[in-house]
Length: 129
Length: 260
Image (cartoon, rainbow over all chains, first blue to last red):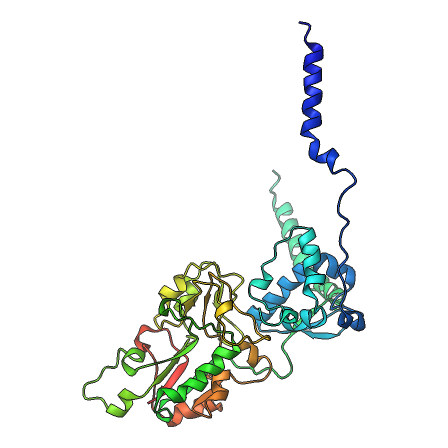
């Protein structure tokens, strides 16, 4: 029973190899991308809801919009400040954020979020698909 | 457990108090909710209890006259054009008398009426069998205006609705339609592969105060209005003309009427 050093050595090699992806990539994490605001969005200054809310909840808001437009035939959104917007991803959101690749895709790609919005909704900035 | 008369009465008393307090609580909650977001119909949106359509088939003599009407719809809604008939997507299309009205094959029919082209589309039935068949409620009858509409996000492509619809008003996207759209309308979405689609009575145009694209392109041969408003244009035409509907005996109560 004198194999202690082999066992411990083997275990050590195993752990080092097993953790290879962690120590190899240490400190090399890609920085989180910053979405680029288009000129139009900058000029508008404000989105339909506060920036913090939009950053965290935009997908939920889009779901709420969809339900209201399709199911309840209510297409106008009035935000807490009382400002009115037509609820349309294609015609309202993309009207200001006319740089989908720089604004939407950048973060979605980084977070590996595969949205299916664009299977149907048209990215106007690109012109003909 | 102690279930004396006294404790039971106490319990009911407390319950009644709670119920009485609820409206007060709601009022305070409402006060708070005032600052929240809310949704409305556009000021110029057209409103109706049940939208309906009257098509005056006497005004159409040849299929060529229907072409611009169909084209207006196809353009507005990004309808693809497939060579293969099995892949065809149709919202509004032309058919012949015997296909449109198979239950009215009278003998010695007026040749003129029999030869006319007939425009057919989703009937936006008042009792729609497609909505009952849909397992995800992707297609439903909208309470606010009676349109049988689809939420394409929810459609799983099971095609039960296509089997349920007696009018063949629904088409399935066997292929990604986008490369086959002759001229893309950038204000309206396309569909994706694997969903069913059909006429939506131009819900997106009604919201802006516009009549459906086909009505606009028909030059007065198609009239659109509220079926339950006795003063509407539609009701006026129904009063003054003899009209028929497709497969009325099935009891789906179609809302597209034909003057023949």
